[in-house]
Image 1 (cartoon, rainbow, N blue to C red):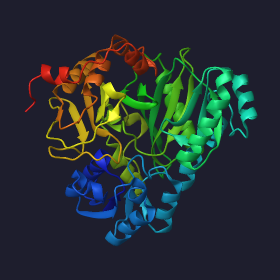
Image 2: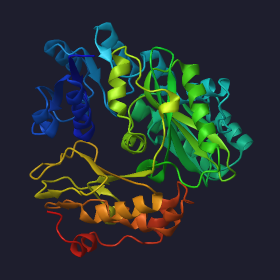
Image 3: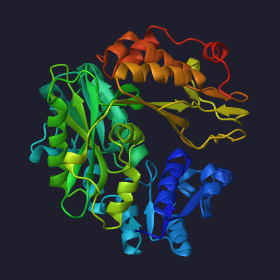
Image 4: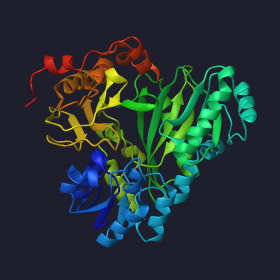
Length: 466
């Protein structure tokens, strides 16, 4: 096992990884921008290195500064967390060249999944079902238009180098296609420095199901069940749960086997997630693979009892996994809500500020992954995720009730600071969501129906959790 690891990230995931290091007896090096000098992980780590000013391009995306920090502190490995450089094959390759272990798949694996069009071709060759559409990037507007007409509207135009719900345009009719195509290529170029796009048929009543996999260097590849991530806004996940509700018998197992075929075909190593769309007819299609730890990994940990981050470290250190497929048993139901500092009444605009009060939920089988604390100044430069609230219970119904209670207890107060807790309570109480028959359109339906109550209604209705 490593003696020292540098964590190339910030926020809750940096603290989550640091805690895994502490339990494994690994020394912790944190990196931080000038805006994060007072962050929780900086205080928690054994060493902390400032790597640049607030803008991510000059700090958390600054490969030379991060690698120099690792070399200077003697860190043997770098854990990238999620986001930032976690799926950058160039970063993984630089680490490799400098004799630093990158805690993730090899650079070539990250590269082939980073090109979404290439990943579709690879998975189709491996026998995974893919959504009808182009298997290579379209070379022109006319070529893309032919594909769209062939697969039938609605279609979605996606950036070949995209991911995470960015660089996408949904088109419902042919007349709107040319403008959407131009917007998609321009956005792809601006976001990823790569204007290539491809076209797929758009599934309007779909569920988003993903499979967690682990693969070590000794030929063992396993999956740890499924997660339902269908509650999304603008393709960004808000609520995740495991196991997925209301799946037909045997479907989760078939999706798990498909993910394993995909992992074997790619030569996968480490922790990863294979994402699928499930149509209303019960057919599932490969969407993409994420070569990193997921934001929603705690729900899998809660139902399996497996520490995924510690397994990442064991695999990266060249050790065999502690598990085999028969060891993986899903027990009960786990649900995660992402609590963001955003104002739902103002189109979810971020609301950074100073936390005068921060009292996370507690009680049996409640987990809170957060980097926040009273007095913490929420920066405006980064993602608005404040905390992840995860609950477990023997049944989904019990887990939903527990989540409702936990959300009601979560107290955040500061000048101008708003959170999405009340919106999440509305979703948890929504009868369609509780039935398990929801699709990826449920958030838009809830917003359209105007069911969001003023945020103060939740805080005024519950006693202090102190």
